Length: 441
Image 1 (cartoon, helix red, strand yellow):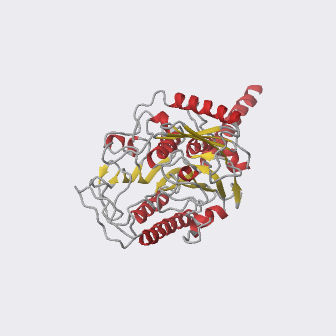
Image 2 (cartoon, one colour):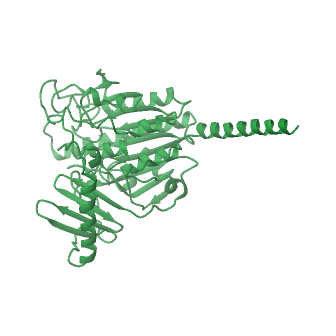
Image 3 (cartoon, rainbow, N blue to C red):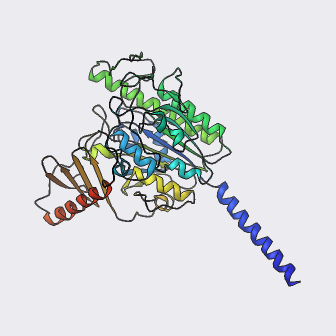
């Protein structure tokens, strides 16, 4: 009799564990990451823009959390994308600068890196990416070789929005790892393919990465004629400042329309309580973007170069209307998603999980954060920001709590703080750059 009871207990325990596991798997959140390109800190209505209307992106803030202190890992395109994909400082991956169409067609993110797509596939996720890659031009570095089941988009820094030709004159629109151009305006095409992916995989747990081209140049609206031709190294056409600003407005608003269509699709398929949506930019606004009230913009290591919009929504899980002042970075998404998928966080990851911050509004553990691009370096320690120009050995120290515009250099006033941060910045760079295999410019 005891043997029978013991056998029944084993069976019930097995069924119970199996049920728990099944429940966990069925509740793995879908993940949608939307990344704008060269979007200024104040180019969205919810971040203060009075000229650009972004009601759909604003909804993410109203129904989720808005970060006031979110940062891209790089102040230019490729480094931030490398960090998003790997969860590491870009210096460890070798993608320290822009992988350019003219100079770096054989450079790319090493296949030895474990991307977030490869990580989530371990938990059974189906993965898709539609849009800008920019961490490798060669077919050997294509997203399908780095964890993405489906890919449609372009691999360069930017393409003609209609002709889909890159800066060096190469045709650049891929389906999987094969060049296959199609008609359409880049922003609308990215949105359309993303919606199709969601619809086809609504019964599965999915990771959907949507790196938009907008509002990066060339400045083209839906009705702007194509001007790049295959084989010709052609830049943007000459336009007045006012014309460019009007096109920039349209480009952002078209992207916002797409965000609205994606969110509506998620709601229509009853996936909104199962889906985490995160929106950010790859760096600060370029020449025509609005980074108010920050100093400088794209390519700079002042706040305007890397403090960007950060928005997250997960109906029923993230508290609506939350304003978050915690300091976070692009590389934090990798460990966040890995932890949400129940996979843990490898020691090789530099980012920290935002899971408890998003779900329970718990503060992050205090940490120092770092940036480096070309001859500039920067470090953040709480309210303090240190900026270094390695060519001149000029250091600048700012208290961001009272000087967000970085106007008052406090190096001489706070020598102890300066020396401490100077030492840590040097140690960090020596550590992460030790095995840097490639240095893109």
